[in-house]
Length: 376
Image 1: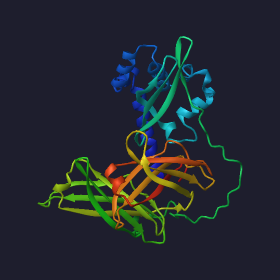
Image 2: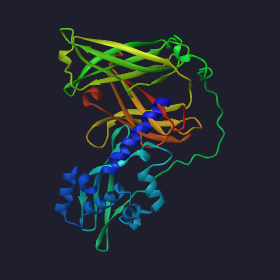
Image 3: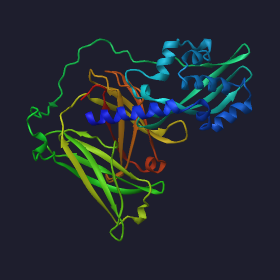
Image 4: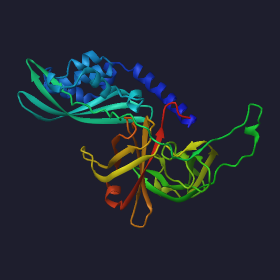
């Protein structure tokens, strides 16, 4: 887990550097459609009010952003800032607003409704946050009615620790641990399927830890062409449960965007494992799972996560496995939540799914990677 915290901090640094280099004019260039729509509508248009608010959020000018909030919003400035900047070391706290798209839904002389899709840069990639915002005329100006955010407030309580835990003993400084020929835990690939996706190829499947101790896992795939040439060699990176407890099954997904499926003759799989200390906590319950529309014209697996422990999970990462009628893995999708999972507080999740997968999937299973700041 220390490895992943290091990677996370490295990504945070990179994201902050990018955010620091970005000037408003450059960032607006990435949202030319939104900018043109605002200019065409006039400086007093509802879209302009939202754009002004978001520009100030982008600059971290919270006073300027809150000045665009309508008095009827019933949201104080502190809650407004927490809603957009994140809390509890969540992914949003490491994110920067890079752009937005504004799509008018309806308008009258006194109010309007606009769908604002905010694009955030994070250490784990781009994330979008779509909100339908109401804009009202207050005097000669348009103001944004910002919805009252809901922040979980778990009550004080004592939660008994009943989970299993494995500690890794490495010995003292004089112990030649690194020179010992210690075998990694036994992890076996139980299924593999290569599929075509957006002109490239994706290798998906599942692996199981057959050992009695936890394993840190990486799954690698090598694509071989008809003449024996190597077409590509990639790893699962974050699309796998890296910390795999005994007898636990993890999905994996390895992307080859530049290799067409028709060019592949065979796939060579390899699992790298190492010893790691781990605990079976925090336990995250997944409930109310269903595939439906995500509100933006795409399909998504939606549901709810419940952190049943007494620890805060700062960055939850969802990995969903989809199966056909015969139980074969036909897709693996993943997504991050930019809100922290507080103890005993449910949070919704959404993972986008290609439409053909949504139509053919007969079952699915969700697992959650758990990244906690300060964890080891």
